[in-house]
Image 1 (cartoon, one colour):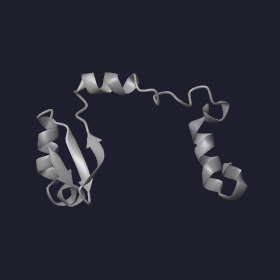
Image 2: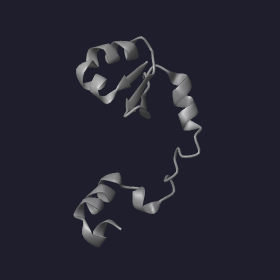
Image 3: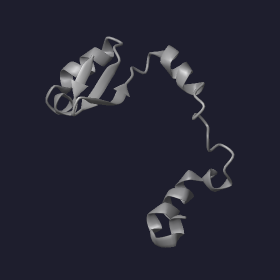
Image 4: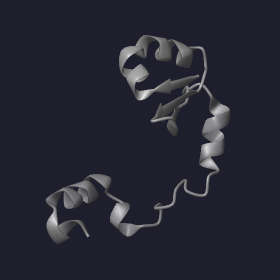
Length: 82
């Protein structure tokens, strides 16, 4: 199913029903695809995402070991986030 951002706002129930029918929803903005809404039950796609080269890209970064601390540092602004 394809839906625009306006559809997402005005026809949320229809979109949720499509997701519950195990359909993937492609979200568009100005006729450009910007996102996919994938049903959680769809394990096949989830497995393929885990195999993506981007999955776990920051797992070895020492500054990411405590996500809450990292986010606090980012929110400080200035040079505290870098």
